[in-house]
Image 1 (cartoon, rainbow, N blue to C red):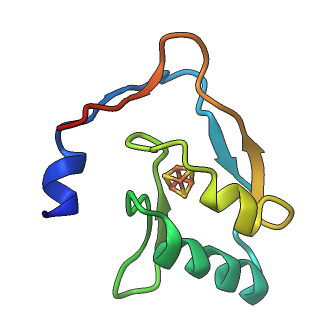
Image 2 (image 1 turned 90 degrees about the horizontal axis):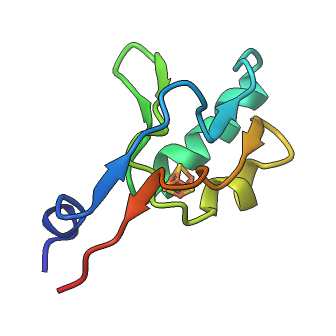
Length: 94
Ligand code: SF4
């Protein structure tokens, strides 16, 4: 079964004014190394690095799995919370 196809059936409600994950500014090489861990580890591919080395993160589509918090919560993550109230991911199975 294709994971991307499965993920595309989940719905996301994004709280635009209140991102539930916020990163610190990525400044040093050490920060970039931390970020790259998440490029590999985030199951929703929300941490991206393009060919020019630009780093991008968008918390829309987050599965709230906590992987980035476990890996980088003490380094490049400034905030990690579950989305409030009715926001966030709604999983659909089957
Ligand atoms: Fe990605 Fe999981 Fe972190 Fe969400 S909680 S940004 S899905 S690693």
